[in-house]
Length: 373
Image (tube, rainbow, N blue to C red; front, side, top):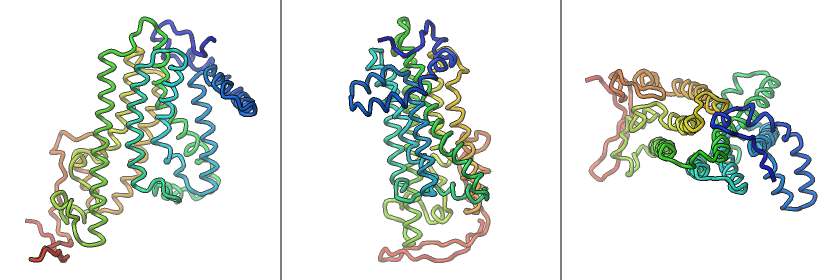
């Protein structure tokens, strides 16, 4: 059986949308009917034949469009617009694993594809766990930012259109398109003169893994701070495991400024963007084409993070008096090299709660004026 892939003769061919995707778009219209017939026949072999006879990017595109409909229905029925958020850390891995599995079943070389799949699975497990422990999968949970967006859009019909076009459709497609470079790796595996995995591939893959590690530490530092802060607010005590890490002034400030957060206001967001930018640049290196259609995904990803971070910071600045000073001293994503990139406390007078410890180890909360020295 001929593979439903373009005839690529050079690495440049692999980066061409008109050559590698456009000729196969018509398959998407026949896919629902074929799947319906296979489901009626209850034959696994027919399903496998459909899977292998359909261009892998088109299969992923069809799945993404199908999910966007489900996201729309679920969000409107529940009036909860975090449906895509719950799958944000899962779908990119699903697509990358799909490309690797399809290539393996089709007899293609998969070393690069397997490496990408493993890296994104590690990314997925870590990010999904972080989302879960923050309550993201709790029944009825919704990102607080959607409530703010809803409050700014007073027209119900306009917000419904926004849900269709952006929340449900654009975000679902975005989670596919950030994995589009992996499709190029699949096409590259068809070129006999291309080695499957060389030293540059090892370097790119390890860079991506490095950013996953940085993101882990950033999220963990944020988690430790928030855990200590919430305990302190309830008991006026710093939990024992955080006594050497945070002091009362840190916790009363309301936001973390230590560790990686003293260098960047959003080190986790920075790492998240760099993971997918690394995958795109890795693909560009391999295809010898540095401006191509697969960049749509990573560009959209960067733009979404710019917008969502701006909204997050406007909320933080309205909640925490010292946040604007933090913004002035520390870069949003990239550390500022022109000044010492570490947050310094304000010297302004401000009423604060201070905690003193008695002889028997009990902590007493007292009000004090913090005066500049």
